[in-house]
Image (cartoon, rainbow over all chains, first blue to last red; front, top):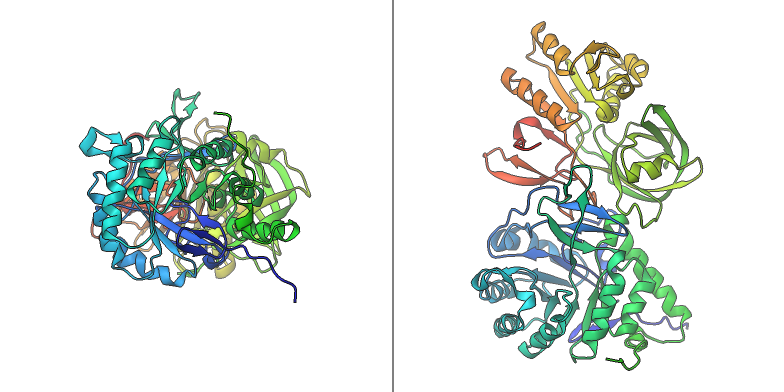
Length: 310
Length: 275
């Protein structure tokens, strides 16, 4: 019998059949791409972020194209906790992949409130905390640049849920490592590294920013080397698992992240340019592993690491 | 109504180009090979990418003009980087496409229909006219109003005339048809007729959609418009292509033009402000 090598990975206590995870905000509530491939092909799905109250989001234009990427400023549009539980959560069991819920709030206490209520629901495998949003109790300072606030959030969430809690870091140079450590100390089971990069594009004909919100978040293949840097730097400072997220277009990008020290990889913007991306990446990753000398993907994690010079 | 259940979308990683040629100054027509069983409903669109390139990065929504015997046609105006690259592609090159996507026009099986097109908004209404003509086996009661800035913006009129009882053509500079906006002959047309059963569908620039919505609302005529917004995914997840609309209860909300549109009852649209 030919031994098929296993793509399965562990992110803390969570076992995934493969390391490819749909990133929050790029895969809807899990069924939007079902005409292109079954979501159960993915290792996990992280659904669009939910807040306590419904949010209408920003004016348009909300997106624009850039070289090898795009900017978005959607404004965290979502139906709010109660509508989410009523209309979205019942769909999750049919996905065939573990579902993590992305949570965000405007104040520290929003996060445990969401986590507690959602922990009572069926069909949920864990939480991912989006800390790239302004804290109204701190003059609009983003949680993501405030290690103390992040630690408070994570501690409060871990107190009310027994599900795994991942923290999605912002890719801010200088502070990301401190925030990562604060999340670890607060009890996070894994870190998602990272979110989009603050960015801008200007329409030179109209002499105005291309987005109604002026600035937006850059995603797509343009950011992959930047996020790889953060994965590398953070991996040497924390013990909890890292889930990489930034610009993956194919299986080789995913392998690069694994070699840098991530144990799973999110894919996001690639689905916007190829609706079958998840299926294709999982299948090429399988081919890559079959041809490689390794018997499992777990062996690949951290393989590229050499001692840092700083 | 016809086409209540549009077909499921499919992904075509490399659809072969059969023809890509300029059909009017600044406008091109693309013909690509699709499976022979590919069908769509008028008003639906495709996401089209120049195959697997990182720049231009995102796909472009393209309204489907016709599909026959595995040959799909869409038209585009060469305006920017994406359409510029598209215009350079040749026969046997490949496109990455997914679709058909979105809500189509709800076309009545009987009764008069007014189709209003502005410039590159013509293709989805071309497919509406062609579909109605084929189902009804008659051009009677199919009226097409087609406007542009100049004569270059108005093309395929001869083809449209085969499907329509009458094609009204306008150009703002008077270089073809009636001088002025397309709403001019449309308003005249409404004066002369019993309009109780008229059905109106439009696709064109935002100000044009806004004014036909106003005309129809004043006269109590049902009207559907196809709206445009920058789009990334085409399947409802990126939330980029939203438009502010009112529900039947009058509640305001953003709808996604790729899945709850692009065709929408014009009375639901909350017309913007700054556009």
